[in-house]
Length: 396
Image 1: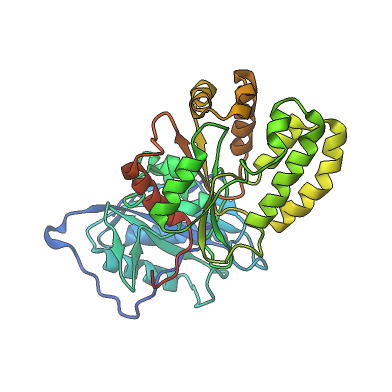
Image 2: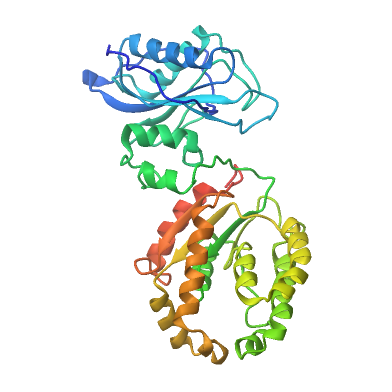
């Protein structure tokens, strides 16, 4: 047994579930070799800090388990029913020679010792212990899933993991903890079949959004939603200098967004990939409309914004404006010839600001200078990763 580290810092939460086993059988691995494992500790009833500290002490006092590290405490809002207290959470690093199932069963017994009562999923609890990682193993059984299937969606988990080892690789996603945490920007998310599983590709003109969206949709075997770019009858004239038609062009796009992304148009649970993110509308409206046009535009924008489905994952594809300018020149669309580098640089800054404060869903950032949107192998790897950010039916 090790020396229990002091628990300090702020506060937080963790609500993960595994199937409990009524039979506790400790299985020690052959040769008693130890494995580094990570455990989430959370509570939102009673003295939360004391409950977490008690659970940590019981872990460390257990035969075959040594507690080697403990993150600060953090607080978060419940992901489940809202009528419950805020959660407090931490992550712990342990060394153990117990097999995964035996370790899990020991964690369940500690929960029982500390008075956890059976309850509904994501409901309140005095203590919650979850096995996040067990070495680099991938375990999928009716009783235990490791890595935890949604840990990459929880900032309150990843914050603690980053304190303990930010460079630690997720054995399935093949990304370090600090990268997974950066994708959430402090937000906490969960997978749900009640929402359309919309994946939106974002980025400036010429970065390769449509190529990536088409390839990703093919790899995921799902629908691809293409921006009504070439069908907009006003855009060539707007590019040619007809600023009086800028409002008509933006309203055309708005109406097409509702037709493509309306909550009543997309099927809950079904995956789709769009080659644009709806939130780009305000970037282009503020850049292209006069103050008077913007005043006329906003009521329609706000109404349609409330009617469209939000994406469950954004992929922000970025590159230098100069590289995007070269792609625009190579595809030789006559009305795009008027796009200049300063304008593209301004839009790039707008997109950077948008995703710097993005909290609507996880966002994967891809450097188009390194990621080849036409490379089937790279697309396949990305698709494997994306699948962990969308809900999938149990039979698939």
